[in-house]
Length: 561
Image (cartoon, rainbow, N blue to C red):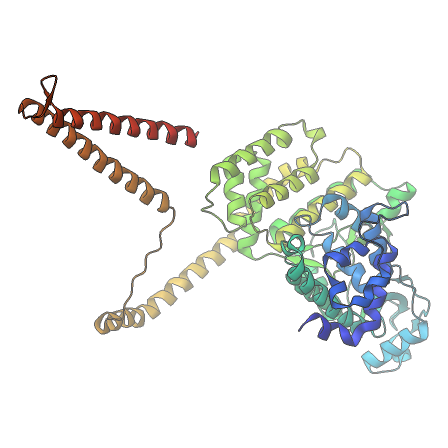
């Protein structure tokens, strides 16, 4: 679908977006997208080319304010982009992390109507008491406190009216803008904007389904069911569905309050250390982690137990990905340049990169710059950001799961430093490395790997007769083709051609000298000073040819330099 077909049904919304972008000094983006060529009337909204914003905000601040003004879809888009330090400059990432859902709550009556419609029964039959005044309000939904008939206090998350329709409309417009960006801007094309919108659409549709969030919580609970460092609220499946989610009310306070209000009675060092270790276990042992562990999404109970909330955005790693990423972190911990380089190329699926030595040299610079400094001065966020920049420099593709992991580690380090200024994530990583190594040799994982290997061998054995029969049949029919693909032979072919040319010239020069010598000794007329002229011409020609060859060799040598 083209820009016009996608946006025509939403013309009013497109105009709203244009107005907001211009209001926050970003009308120049529309020029870059050449949207004015598609809709000439847009020009009257735009400032003159090159006009700067007249307010006091920086460019990242303008972007954040514009996204907040544009509402839920664009707030979520900004939050997603803040998790992509591989494509967004650090100053923009830091600003987008401040994005807030500045959306007023919808009425309690509307919330009751949605609950009753979704759970298909009167609210009085579901909850003993339902507080119509929301506890919290966000872009996709809001939370109400309620009480079950057994006396349990619960939090009920209710999705906003018509939010799916609003988000669907905005995604259509984002696809249209992304297509324009790929078509008209070489700068934006490098970020593959259409693919970014696809990833965003997939993520936000998951957040719109509270059933998925409930399943995420259940899976998370299984990973930590015997861990007394963490509290995991119970969910209530019978009172939950796609647009309504009921879970146990957490009696705790957010970490942001502990840091902002300097609340006493909490062991900040213990909370920071436990939070980091819990996060590392999620990533490197379980392969299933909270992808947005900022201070507003972590609560602390009176006994210093930690409770993660909001399981809408989770990262998931395949066993092979967990293995690759854990190898990368271990190589960073042990400061081994060769291992770091190998881990990078494995993670990015480029094990035979042609610039291997350059990458290894850059990795060594990173190790010297960051990993050799005193531990108290080491900032893991800077190390990981430099690692991302290095990967981007060599045009390597970073898996989305890796960027989520990097962002989660950077975020948890920031939270830890807010709680406890002497917090050292790198030291915790060093201590946790033994746990990572032990998990690699976990009996269950080894048994699973062995069983998978046996199953693969079984499959190969079962299919071997038919595969061999197929090959023999193709050989008999003359249909078997063997293809060879070579790499890097262009320079070899060039060298062979040069060598052959030099050989021919050498033989010719030698033949000329030998022939001239024969002519001189043959004493054949005509002569000059008793020297046969034919032989003399041969010697002079040989000398000139030898000088030309020598000059050409010198020139080639200096060109290579």
